[in-house]
Length: 62
Image (cartoon, rainbow, N blue to C red; front, top):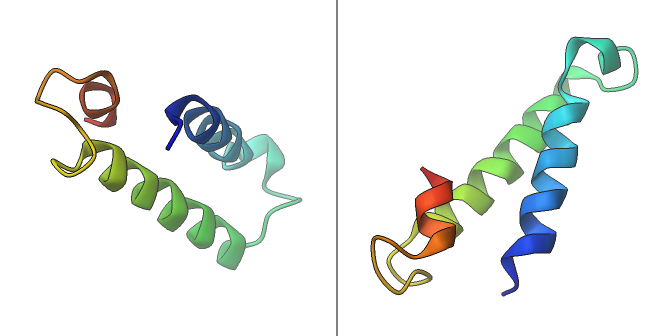
C-alpha cells in the first residue's frame, strides 16, 4: 500500500468535516468519513503494516 495517496485522501476528507462545509455533508456522511479515516489510521499504525515503531506511517498514525 502506498501511504501518500491514503494520507492525502484522509486529509481531504477531514477538511470536509470543518463547520464551513456542514451544509454539504449530513450527519451520516460525517460518521462514515470519520470511521474510514480511523480505519486508515489503524492500518497505518498496525504492527503488520509497519516495519518497526519508527516507521514513518506508524509514527504519523499516532
